Image (cartoon, rainbow, N blue to C red):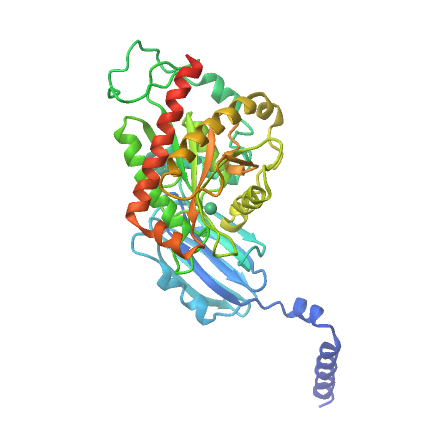
Length: 438
Ligand SMILES: [Zn+2]
């Protein structure tokens, strides 16, 4: 009796104590996070599972074999209807996740079990709120090393990036110098038998008579949709369609063309540049669709990197929003922000001039199919244009935030016209590159 009354008293006083505390402290002691959204982005490169919540979620994870599973233990959350919807988000073509199960493991722990279809290298990390996103817990399932070699060896760059082995300008922190030094020099041939007659032949001091290598970079992807039009058209889908169309046309001309992504997957900016460098690209073209708060804003624009800063306020604003892609898409390791400045300065001046030449050719061609919002190539510090040795441009095809231009971007005809304009600009550039370097 005595004990009970003492307990009751203690309970009462702790209760009244809690009431007297500030909401901040109470939030800290209670710390129950609500899952507000769940998403799964299946892709061959990697599958991403995202849990979004109002407060950060405490987590632990471990792998189990036979059969392969990834177990994620979440602390201080409840199973709500949002979290319950997660198993239905698994798609049949997901290369890595077969199914997901959720259960209350003990009083404080909710357990999420992912049944795996293949052996994976998991990367689990938390992201702070950014843009429209709240707190995110991200589970990236990468293919194991052997599978990766078979699928796309370049995708190993993604994991290197997340482990902090790649700089934000696409150069490698550890092995880059030796890689460059040991790279085999393409054989010098007197004539290009495999190139059709109408293909311009690119000549650089190192390589004679070989197929030009073009890397096309469709912006955004996966968790990062890019800009979204008034009727719901997503930039990431539009630019992938345009890039695929452009690749088809360039391949027909005999160029070697690669895409930085060919599926709906988020690829960090540094990895896009690293891919282009690994492929020893002659030309890098990032493809985007513009957006602005004022729906009347319209037109096509072409951008190149600047060492001195943006040529105008709009270009500066655009570079800032585009450079935010890594925050929005979410990378586990924030790569070194200090670019290798020595390398940058040595080669960048020549590359900027070439980029401007390339940009001018593409801009002139695009000017025939849509209004240009500027008659010159604008310059700003875009992270994705920072390959120190590859002429690189960023094409803003049209404003997806403008209802009329959103319709354009949704049409097959405009996508084809845009692709043909980029091809025409590349041809013009490569033709002048022959004159300039021969
Ligand atoms: Zn974009």
